Length: 169
Image 1 (spheres, rainbow, N blue to C red):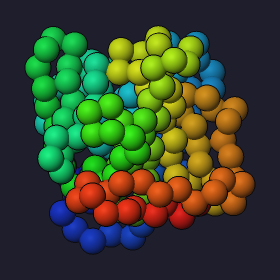
Image 2 (image 1 turned 180 degrees about the horizontal axis):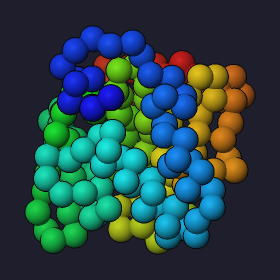
Image 3 (image 1 turned 90 degrees about the vertical axis):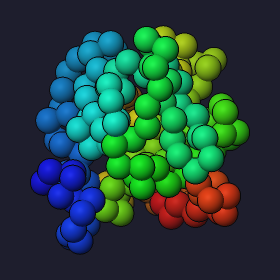
């Protein structure tokens, strides 16, 4: 389903393999680290497109007022094409440790780490991208780290309006 259609009409919720294209996960599992990151960012471009540019060219994700603002390699800045897809963050607005996106009830979590091996290799310091499945979370950058949701504690994020955003796992 085209994401613009999903944003404009009520549809049934996506679950696991319907949302996270199985091909993306398969490609990630069979690729080098660099190719895996490109596949994961292609997934972001498809499900959470930017108003202009690509997640592949992002250098920084920050929250400005209640909007996700993305700084690009060329110095420009943009946001999500569908701003309502940004729902919450962890950490400080100017340097989040995680960004939570949502499309039709399915969450995608971007984790940032400026000190980890993967995080330091990525211009935007993305350590991992996790996709909510049915009773599990799929790691697009560390495919072998897919975990059962019941094995992870519920997590509280800060919603874009400043309130608590409880992510049930």
